[in-house]
Image 1 (cartoon, rainbow, N blue to C red):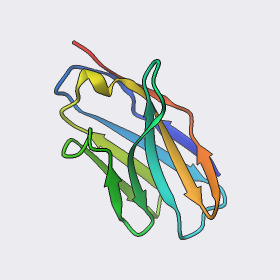
Image 2: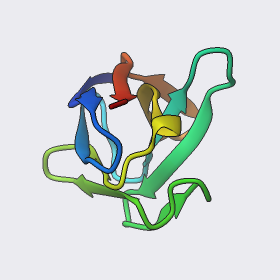
Image 3: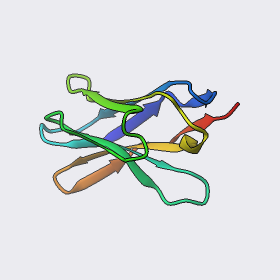
Image 4: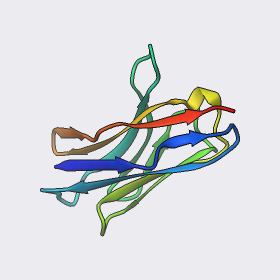
Length: 114
Protein backbone atom coordinates (compact mmCIF):
# COMPACT_ATOMS: atom_id res chain seq x y z
CA UNK A 1 0.00 0.00 0.00
CA UNK A 2 1.29 3.43 -0.92
CA UNK A 3 0.17 6.67 0.67
CA UNK A 4 0.38 10.14 -0.82
CA UNK A 5 -0.26 13.05 1.50
CA UNK A 6 -0.81 16.68 0.56
CA UNK A 7 -2.22 19.94 1.86
CA UNK A 8 0.29 21.25 4.38
CA UNK A 9 1.56 24.79 4.48
CA UNK A 10 1.90 28.01 6.44
CA UNK A 11 -1.17 29.49 8.08
CA UNK A 12 -1.81 32.19 10.65
CA UNK A 13 -3.20 31.34 14.08
CA UNK A 14 -6.94 30.86 13.88
CA UNK A 15 -6.73 29.78 10.27
CA UNK A 16 -7.62 26.51 8.58
CA UNK A 17 -5.94 23.85 6.48
CA UNK A 18 -7.15 20.61 4.94
CA UNK A 19 -4.84 17.65 4.62
CA UNK A 20 -5.49 14.77 2.23
CA UNK A 21 -3.95 11.32 1.99
CA UNK A 22 -4.71 8.93 -0.84
CA UNK A 23 -4.02 5.22 -0.46
CA UNK A 24 -3.35 2.89 -3.38
CA UNK A 25 -2.45 -0.75 -3.77
CA UNK A 26 -3.89 -3.85 -2.07
CA UNK A 27 -6.69 -2.32 -0.03
CA UNK A 28 -9.37 -4.46 1.53
CA UNK A 29 -12.62 -3.55 3.19
CA UNK A 30 -11.69 -3.43 6.86
CA UNK A 31 -9.00 -0.91 7.69
CA UNK A 32 -8.17 2.15 9.77
CA UNK A 33 -6.72 5.42 8.55
CA UNK A 34 -4.99 7.74 10.97
CA UNK A 35 -3.19 11.07 11.13
CA UNK A 36 -0.16 11.46 13.37
CA UNK A 37 2.05 14.48 13.92
CA UNK A 38 5.53 15.08 15.16
CA UNK A 39 6.85 18.41 16.35
CA UNK A 40 10.60 19.07 16.68
CA UNK A 41 12.01 17.37 19.75
CA UNK A 42 8.77 15.58 20.51
CA UNK A 43 7.40 12.09 20.00
CA UNK A 44 5.07 11.30 17.15
CA UNK A 45 1.53 11.47 18.46
CA UNK A 46 -1.83 10.26 17.21
CA UNK A 47 -4.07 13.12 16.12
CA UNK A 48 -7.16 11.35 14.80
CA UNK A 49 -8.33 8.05 13.39
CA UNK A 50 -11.24 6.76 11.33
CA UNK A 51 -12.25 3.19 10.60
CA UNK A 52 -13.58 1.95 7.29
CA UNK A 53 -16.98 1.94 9.00
CA UNK A 54 -16.68 5.62 9.88
CA UNK A 55 -15.93 5.49 13.61
CA UNK A 56 -13.66 8.33 14.68
CA UNK A 57 -11.36 9.19 17.56
CA UNK A 58 -9.45 12.36 18.35
CA UNK A 59 -6.65 13.47 20.59
CA UNK A 60 -7.94 15.71 23.37
CA UNK A 61 -5.77 18.56 22.09
CA UNK A 62 -7.64 18.73 18.76
CA UNK A 63 -11.21 17.81 19.74
CA UNK A 64 -13.65 20.39 18.48
CA UNK A 65 -11.12 21.89 16.06
CA UNK A 66 -10.10 19.04 13.75
CA UNK A 67 -12.35 16.77 11.75
CA UNK A 68 -11.25 13.51 10.15
CA UNK A 69 -13.23 12.05 7.29
CA UNK A 70 -12.76 9.60 4.46
CA UNK A 71 -13.98 8.74 1.01
CA UNK A 72 -13.88 4.97 0.74
CA UNK A 73 -14.48 5.05 -2.99
CA UNK A 74 -11.30 7.08 -3.41
CA UNK A 75 -9.41 5.42 -0.52
CA UNK A 76 -8.66 8.90 0.73
CA UNK A 77 -8.62 10.31 4.25
CA UNK A 78 -8.93 14.00 5.05
CA UNK A 79 -8.07 16.10 8.07
CA UNK A 80 -9.87 19.42 8.27
CA UNK A 81 -8.00 21.60 10.73
CA UNK A 82 -9.72 24.74 11.99
CA UNK A 83 -8.84 27.26 14.67
CA UNK A 84 -5.20 26.35 14.28
CA UNK A 85 -2.77 27.20 17.05
CA UNK A 86 1.01 27.60 17.00
CA UNK A 87 1.26 24.38 19.00
CA UNK A 88 -0.28 22.52 16.05
CA UNK A 89 2.93 23.15 14.13
CA UNK A 90 4.40 19.78 13.19
CA UNK A 91 5.01 17.35 10.38
CA UNK A 92 1.78 15.47 9.82
CA UNK A 93 1.85 11.83 8.70
CA UNK A 94 -0.97 9.66 7.44
CA UNK A 95 -1.10 5.99 8.37
CA UNK A 96 -3.07 3.10 6.91
CA UNK A 97 -3.56 -0.13 8.80
CA UNK A 98 -5.22 -3.35 7.74
CA UNK A 99 -4.90 -6.84 9.18
CA UNK A 100 -1.67 -6.53 11.17
CA UNK A 101 0.18 -4.34 8.68
CA UNK A 102 0.80 -0.61 8.94
CA UNK A 103 1.87 1.78 6.20
CA UNK A 104 3.09 5.37 6.39
CA UNK A 105 2.92 8.24 3.98
CA UNK A 106 5.52 10.93 3.63
CA UNK A 107 5.05 13.77 6.05
CA UNK A 108 3.58 17.13 5.21
CA UNK A 109 4.65 20.22 7.13
CA UNK A 110 2.06 22.35 8.87
CA UNK A 111 3.31 25.64 10.30
CA UNK A 112 1.05 27.92 12.30
CA UNK A 113 2.65 31.30 12.75
CA UNK A 114 1.90 34.97 12.41
